[in-house]
Image (cartoon, rainbow, N blue to C red):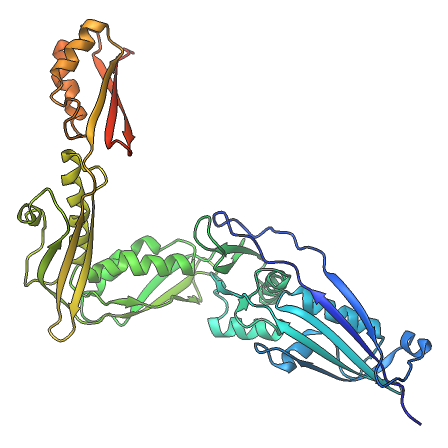
Length: 460
């Protein structure tokens, strides 16, 4: 007696990916309804009785093919089907729809074969093309490895990244809340996309909200070449604040790293922070944070090389630098000095001036040469000068008094002292005068129109 065999194929299209993010707002895009196309296929010319299709079968096996990202066993487990249970063919359709709803697959198809009262199911999938890395900010009750391992056991298709569309983010959030609840932590999970303002989403950030996790202690491991007290002092603003891995990571790599960069340790690197819940603290859920440090070698300043067009001689620019050759390369001071160089060009009419510095490190001699490129840009000149708030005679008098005339290189700082010089030529008032300068820059003509509005100071 030949067994009846049959096959049904289901194609499920997951919801489309999210559009570009405007800022870092909480994910709120709705999921479009799944489009399900059911195609009935008959295999080997044998019919399948409607009574048998309508009834339940004992599931003898579940397999999956087509994915390069996930193991077949993970996909089978994600279907929620269990070998040995009784189910109808409609249950396979629901399982396929559930797989597709996660968004991890671009297409999901299934096929089943029956033999007597047993059924085997085969799911054919195609991986989605885009996945976003996930970060977990403040789940301090789990080590990073433990958190990922537990999540994967609960959500088989989670491997550290999520698709931009589908329900995977919601599945992870629900399981994180369940994991916290199992440890007596009554908190909610919040998710936000990560990416540049107005740009595409580059990752997903999960955090628990509702339970404070204050940082009571912070330790930097690997500090040997400088005074550890200096590092601790730089990290003081992190204490007694709620633990946030991303913030501590960026603060360490900028503010704390500056302690090293001031002393010539230009390759100092800070690893990811790890939080440990402290036992016996007055405040529950207080944490100790450890941050690994790789100090690197100390570099000494060998010299500064200048390039680019400059209306100010390089020698004069060099006088504005507060570093000395042969001493530890103070990268922080050099960067501050380079920013200050720009201010030297503005009074000379180079309003768009810029300066860039780039260290060139010699690992053999542990020396550094800083290359500073000047980009002074176009010369801007004063266009129209208008004086408002005064009678015509006084306005004309001040126009003549101004040493900055139309056609002169524009100096935006000139007006700061102009009121002090002009006050003797203004009508007397009880409380004096105030000046409000307004400038309009014309990029096409490289001119700046200025309107100076005078008004008497109101007495109280």
